[in-house]
Length: 259
Ligand SMILES: [Zn+2]
Ligand SMILES: [Zn+2]
Image 1: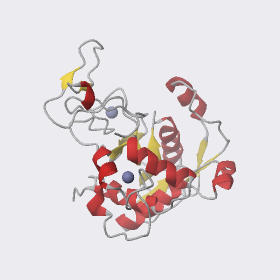
Image 2: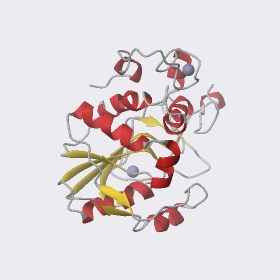
Image 3: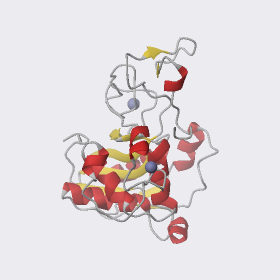
Image 4: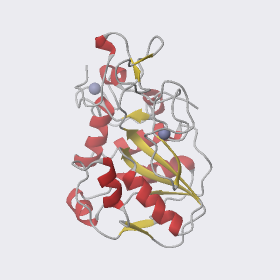
C-alpha cells in the first residue's frame, strides 16, 4: 500500500527526463529522489500537516466544509519542480505519476472525483487544466468517475501577494456547483497553500448537495519539516509546536534550492 514514488511509477517507461532536475532519468533521478520529502505521521490527522506529535486538528487546517485533506509530499525541491513542469511546461506525464503517489495514501471512501477548475482565461493560456489532469489520473487509479462539479463564477487575480485572511475573503463566492453533486466527493488540486481555494470549492460542492468533501493535492506547503533521523526537537525561541532539526545542515526549508 505505501510505496515509494520511485517504485510506484517505475513501470512508466517514457523517454522522459527527471521531473525534478530535468537532467536525470524519469521520473526522479537518485539525487532528486533523495530530496523528496514525503509527508506522514506524526501529523495533523485532519489536514496532514507535519506536527511534532499527531493532533486532531491544527492551525494550518483548511476551512470547515472540508472533512480533511492529504498530500503525499511537501511542496519543495524536486516535487515543486515537477508540479511546475506539469503546470507551466506541459509535462503531462507528471500527472499520472503524482496520482499514483496520491492513491497510495489512506483515503476515505468517495463516490466521485472532481477538481478545482482553473479560470477559463488561464486554461486558454496554458492549453489545459493541471488539476483536471491530476483528478482524471486519480479517478482512473481509484476506478471512479471524474466529473467537473463546480465552476468559477468570477476570475480571480493571483493569490501570491495576499495574506491568508485576504485570500479567504477573495475566494468567497468564486465557485458555484455545476450539475447534481454526489454525496461524497474527492476534491483534487495541484498544491495546497492556505486552503482558501479548496475551502471555497468545498462550499460550492456542499451547496450543490455533497455531504462529505475530502481534499487531496499532489503537494502542500509546510512551514518546517521534521528531520528524518533522530527525535525532533522543539524550536525553543519561537514557541511554536513545529519540529526543528538539530544541526543546521539538516534543516531544509521549502523554497531552498535542492541540495
Ligand atoms: Zn533529478
Ligand atoms: Zn491541520
